[in-house]
Length: 129
Image 1: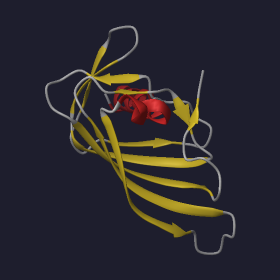
Image 2: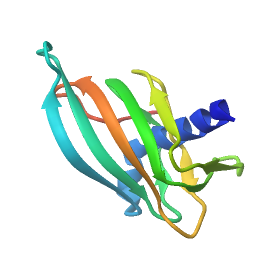
Image 3: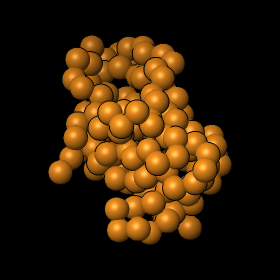
Image 4: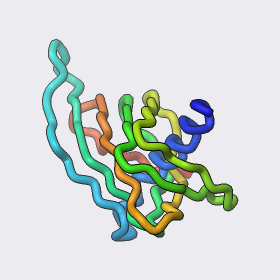
C-alpha cells in the first residue's frame, strides 16, 4: 500500500511543473532558507492545493522533494486509474526522479505541504517529457 501511495504521489508531483498554468493548482511558498553549511542549496517549504480537475504536469527538480498530504482525495493517472491519496501520507522524490501526471478526480481539493532541498538559482520545477 505504501509503495502504491508513493508511486501516486510521484506522479502527482511530476506534473506540478506545469500544473500552475491550468489555474487549478495553487502553490504558496511559506519559507525559503539557505541550507546550513552549503553555499549552493536552499530549502523551500510550500503549500500545494490541487483543485478538482487540476492536473499536476510531469516534472522533476534540481534537488530532493518531501511531501505530506494534509487533505487527501482521489487522483487520476493519464491512463484513467484512480489512486487515493490518504491524509498523512508522506512521499520522497530524490533529485531527478520524474513525478506528476495526475489529475484531482474528487469534488474537493487535495492539499499537501512540500519541502524542497534544491540548488539555488535553478528553476524549482523542470518539465519532463
